[in-house]
Length: 220
Ligand code: GRF
Image (cartoon, rainbow, N blue to C red; front, side, top):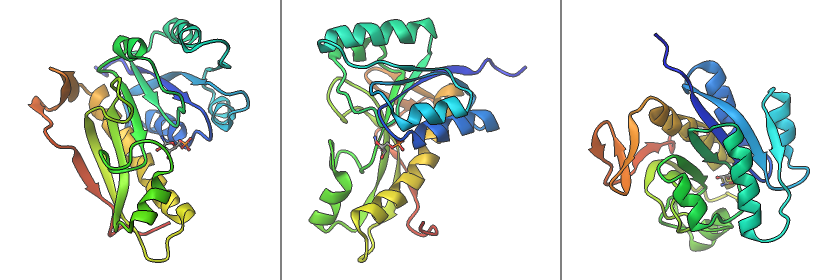
């Protein structure tokens, strides 16, 4: 018997390429989930146009009033779709501890750095400025502290001498589209879980993230 697909909500603010990667992974059967709603916090987010083109339910919640008011509307909108998991995919808003607590253990984020290095913005620029030779992306459980929740899976890419912010970002993004669906597939399959304040995979505490090494892969 095929298990019921996980009901997944995606939150975004912009382009939505990670949302598309997740939706395609659901459609292909690689990720045993169904995107039940895509929510943007900005009017005109390209990701909403892309989600509609994929036939997905969408909502745009423009921030009115304080964070509490926004999160009340966000929660109401989400709960109408009864999500079992939330994927932040380029969602540029910091969520309150109360909101995080409600979805703790079933809310994920993709961040374009090898966390704990470079939380926050402008990761590619900061990597280039530091002269790092290794970079990548991280899928992590969301906790109340920004970009600090337990990391499940990381991609590693090489920083090339000729890299600009744009070329480096593109190379990392291509790996995001692989590792985000992969980690969520583990969750949908019941292999990945939140227990005792941490990530567990296949019944064992993940003391360090799993790493996929893309350094030898063809570069976009
Ligand atoms: C990605 O780089 C992701 O890691 C970061 O925001 C960007 C979103 O890109 N959190 P997209 O909207 O999914 O194309």
